[in-house]
Length: 280
Length: 323
Image 1 (cartoon, helix red, strand yellow):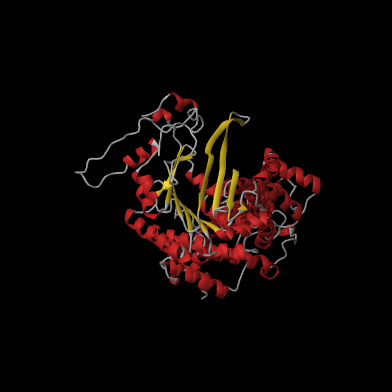
Image 2 (image 1 turned 90 degrees about the vertical axis):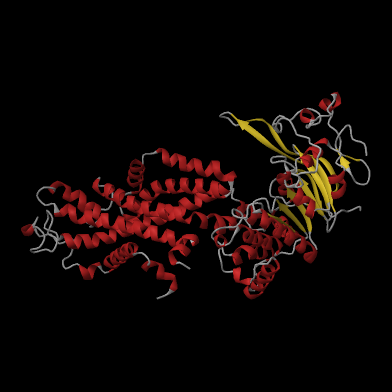
């Protein structure tokens, strides 16, 4: 085993998280081979059938296979969640760190962030989606924009704290270029909070994506997503609880796994904690 | 002596004090107020004073780590007007040793990365092997050994970390090193080792030190000349022995009297300063030391005394001192 990945096996629970994420990614990629029935096939004769019989996890109110929809839903949710995290973390870290280190740009950059923050998050997403229309990319942009502001604020505050550290002054004295100081010293020293922030962003964005789906402003209802499944199944809570339990369990397990993985990564990325764990 | 190694003239650093919701500037803290001195090549100038007297700010202003007014000529070149890449390249020749050996090393970098950073940042990326050799050589010189290269700062003790900081400052082979209280954060037993190391490196690499400290015995050990600062101004500047044996300024006198005497039977002249250091936001008129001075008279409250040579290079800023 490569030394680099050995940390995965130090903590059993973190390993479970990574395994679940790996399985989920595999499921998302191999969805057409794993789903026995197409998630779109309607079968009115077999609607609301409990798990076990005709379908492994039952069928919904249109007789569609819940297991197939959950498998394809993993695709939608993972792409959506990753899209939001990449967009919000990428732009948020850049904006926050630049505003925090190059203080002259702060009034300009952070006021834009403040304006975006002034909107209630879901309202901002709603406005953006109504302007640009429905669809995966637009939904990612809409939700990503709301999380960008939080990441930018956190990174801005962290940058202000780290820029006064003596080792930053030492780097200046050593002739390191300002932008290189941001990349080599400031960003690595805020990696742990950024990773934690990203895992939360991923978890919450799954819920926001589901909320947009529920309001009919997210992904078109025909496309299976955990959010669509939840909002559609909501009507059948007492008659067919499996319609909620299946996507609900998917969301809970995914969020939990990302949190566990985030914790393990943070420990790995901190050299001091790493030495303690590995006992070197 | 037309072109001294380092000549600081009329150095001023005022921090604006803002208050209220509109951040209007209410006044200035004169951290460094009209400081002038020279340092010769190979010499060690000690800079002493209480906390907050501006000695660290002076050092940082000279090294262009904080903006300041006045003039700093290093080997004839004006440092305060350098900008951008020119300033970065000039940093090769003047480096700093920082006070806090814990906070001044990036916790996420290995010793190799920390020490080699100025090398690659200023001189450009060289061959990795060549860089490694240079890092190993300088680590050897500060008494750490090349085995330290792949380790992280937290694996070292305070004294060892300070050696890493010294190695980083010396890797570009600077001519001038500003040491900002390099031992005040260390255990007394380790202080002596680091001071001796600094003295040894001075000979080996032909260094000139501006040695900032508040501990008089440390300064006495390593310096050739000593400057005493009070509230942003230099009040006395003299060769080491002259200053310690015959202090001319009452403040220096009081500072020296405050050093504990190891011999309990030796009677020492006591001189205890009354009151606190005045606020630098609102310094006293005239000589800023006059409210605490035992010899103060009317002139002290109205006129700022000039730092003048009282003979044999012994400068003092007091209305009542004679050489």
